[in-house]
Image 1 (cartoon, one colour):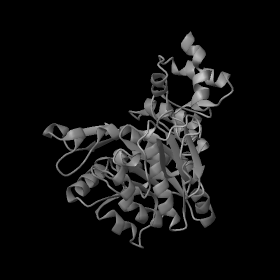
Image 2: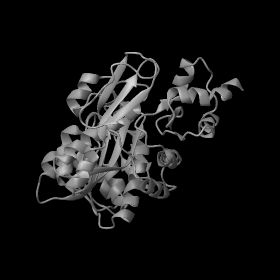
Image 3: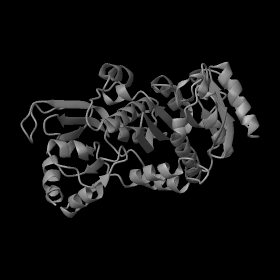
Image 4: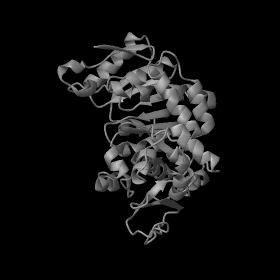
Length: 377
């Protein structure tokens, strides 16, 4: 069937053939990833303002080629790669039907990236599941920007902990801020991978949305910058009884034996995870400004980017409903809840992970006390 998205028209496998979310027998197309692709196009536009020399773009797991076609429509010199011959043929057809230059090649992306005759300014990894098998090749050979999607959220957030340890060389923990846990586990693994090549993979935009995490990493060839990002790795310590969480920087953990707030001993330690900022605020604003009316998810993308721009840099978030349930309270309107925290002298913002997620520099007892008046009202 034909699909129009972001000003281009592509042929995709027919979801009516019994496939889930548009997946055919051999070629995958996921309509629920339109938000991901809209943000990607806005990133490509904004990044050209930041670095005008960027030109080449690799759609590393092309499938239908929709992502590569949209990048080509933005003027990028696009290569769509896939190991499936049917996917390559479809990507080639979709470039042609939109009268766009670009090529589609049947190659393993790792082999393609290690081909010394080819260098790509932007490498986009959007695999099924974990991106880790492709990370070394991407960071070793990309010039400016590496874009990564990870859909294996259960290993990332600690729900499938042993799998998360194997894939990401980090101990993830399943907490009430599991989307952020997954995002920071992913960033930790990618930053450490890039550092092996004396490159800094600097997060300029990252988000966790529904069933995936998506990160955009700008490459810096200074080893000292890579060292700085390694210094932003560390551990989160989480109390399952009172929900207090603390964090420490460094590659050696010093987990407390008991919670210093409630005295409980049900403590979880996660790490090493990335504790720094997951985005560059100025760049996020530029991405929001680059959204276009032709994008089907422009409104959702703008809300997401606005939340990301304003979000505090704390490495965990709270869930308002989870806290209010623990306190046997009804949850007030989020804006009123955050206003009470600010009136009490604390920083407080929404977090992009969900409508009930927020960030603050207040402790759990301080949150409870600051918002008590709202409950009484």
